[in-house]
Image 1 (spheres, one colour):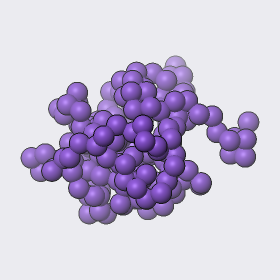
Image 2: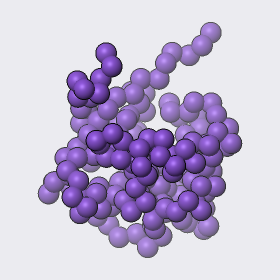
Image 3: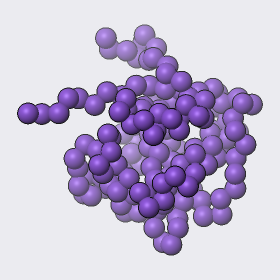
Length: 171
């Protein structure tokens, strides 16, 4: 018997003065293409066993990272995206693309050994501020119904459900 399909919804927030204040993080830096292996390890470990786990292995995670960095979800934003390195491993990362006419938070990931330390929240806030400083007014992401931890994080940062515009909705 196959499992039911994962239900994801589009959430968004306005990049305005209500953004929480960013916190500095000396271990955070911009992402480069050379980070693909680090990001794949992070992706594989952070999604494994969660509602967002699609059953892939590390090779599938590496292919997804290469695909994201190469523009599958729109041009990758190397300026807004960030990775946090702790003890030479990727502890957390926020990956941003320009998908169609939207700013898409394509991935927000934290290694299991670093969860509940505020890394994802702080990384998302810094990313949202960089996007605002670049002149963007909205950001969007997809959240899985069953991923209550992610939903709680995004709600606490002001993200709310926002349906696709009629021009982008195939239904």
